[in-house]
Image (cartoon, rainbow, N blue to C red):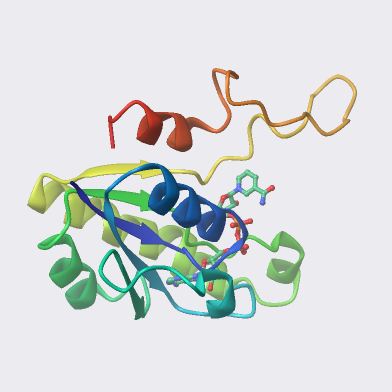
Length: 155
Ligand SMILES: NC(=O)c1ccc[n+]([C@@H]2O[C@H](COP(=O)([O-])OP(=O)(O)OC[C@H]3O[C@@H](n4cnc5c(N)ncnc54)[C@H](O)[C@@H]3O)[C@@H](O)[C@H]2O)c1
């Protein structure tokens, strides 16, 4: 059994990933999520207490991140300001979370020697030539990379 830390685990992709891990592995999962407008604690309801913990907090909080990394074998990073249109009105949260927050996680990974997988890119959901959504397929070499790593026992 590994101990996974999932940032942004109350968001759209993160919450589905957490349910997938709990269902298909014996890993323990801790979610670190700030619960912004995009996070929904209810999407993590019903997970077993002995394999799941929730920490409400900010990925840019270096002390909290350090404490959690000390108890973690691997980190999967989904926390983000992902609603890009909001940055036109207020870019600051995007800098704080997507840049400073991600940097904080990378520094902690380096200090602790922790494996970290990130899903911050948008590649794979749209075909550049047609603009049509691309269906997610488990055999796809790009999508969903992290779920495949879990299934292969590499996370
Ligand atoms: N949804 C997609 O189609 C898609 C496609 C490709 C890549 N991505 C990327 O995957 C990642 C996750 O996407 P999503 O759709 O699940 O996003 P989301 O907006 O649904 O969830 C983001 C989560 O991060 C949390 N969060 C925000 N700031 C935080 C902070 N400072 N500290 C801790 N938690 C914080 C929010 O509360 C929320 O639960 C994003 O980086 C996104 O750009 C998304």
